[in-house]
Image (cartoon, rainbow, N blue to C red):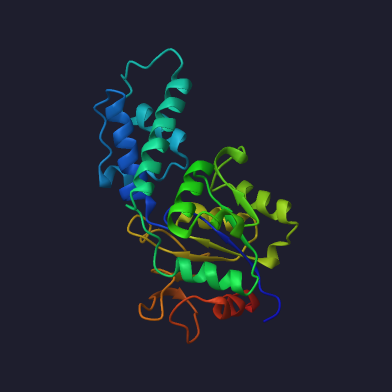
Length: 254
């Protein structure tokens, strides 16, 4: 099949449901370890996800929920240390197998590799978190599956800014029409669309009510042959799970 696009994947919420049972739990463990009585509940964390980036999320939380917090003299350094501890706890959760891949993710990646479809990652999560997730769910060689892994603070401005996608385009010498992004959130969709990239969205519990009107296809997940996806908007043709054939179909649509 000719003219298959490069697939650029987000990570958190797209490859795996990492937010509620991964990052949120890890944040709370880091807070407890630091002697803080902060507790990010499931519902509160859903609100905090409006802020992109873990360190940025902590800053926002302090400003909005604990304005009287007796912060250290160097708040930025304090936040960096908290975030570092949080990443350590997150990677422990990953290592325990607490966060599996979402339906269809492994199959799509393996099929893409078998048909020589280029793969890339564009995410705001840290590189160490991406590495841990990939290696524990897909194997130690899985980092080599992706031609570019753009993660964390590699660009100055995070999603919904287009910077992370523009970085991938530049690194891979790609035109926007040669790509298809896979995202799970409005921020992610906006980032990809601002870069000019067509985007498929797979929603999760935190993002299912967000605005995805700019996506070419919105699904509940990528689907499996025995676990078909539900099309929430857009045209998937006769497909019941995302594969290289429907990727080609979506890429060719105008």
